[in-house]
Amino acid sequence: MDALSYKTISANKSTAQKEWVVVDAEGHSLGRFASKVAMLLRGKYKPSYTPHVDCGDNVIVINAEKINLTGNKLADKKYIRHTGYPGGQRVLTASVLQAKDPARLIEKAVKGMLPKNKLGAELFRNLNVNVGGEHNNAAQKPKTININELK
Image 1 (cartoon, one colour):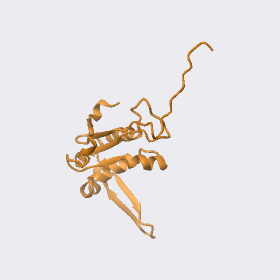
Image 2: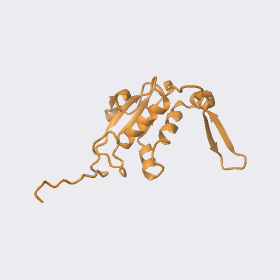
Image 3: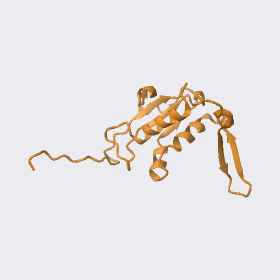
Image 4: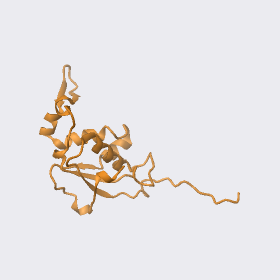
């Protein structure tokens, strides 16, 4: 064979180049915002993306309380859980959940967009959601990303 031979390079845990990024949730729609954050966590915006490896960035979300829900979702969207006991089904609406813990609203949306396996659990640990404009990860020197510039 006279042509050059190319090999596809597959990233692994030691060769993955992970960064810390800050994303501002203010004024964004919940689902669209969560899908972009999930893609950042997964590493799909990087040329070295490998599906079975954690090669995504560590994402810090600020201003979680300023996320928007369109339409009647604040009143109609329900989050259902079960205590494990008979008759133990509990229901929270999005408005109650946002009033109680706005960070959990974003966490639930992003977690639902990650793989449902060990890799998804590992990726979810790379997400930090903060209420307000401050975060406690300044030592990692995160860079700020405008989520609107991502496809």
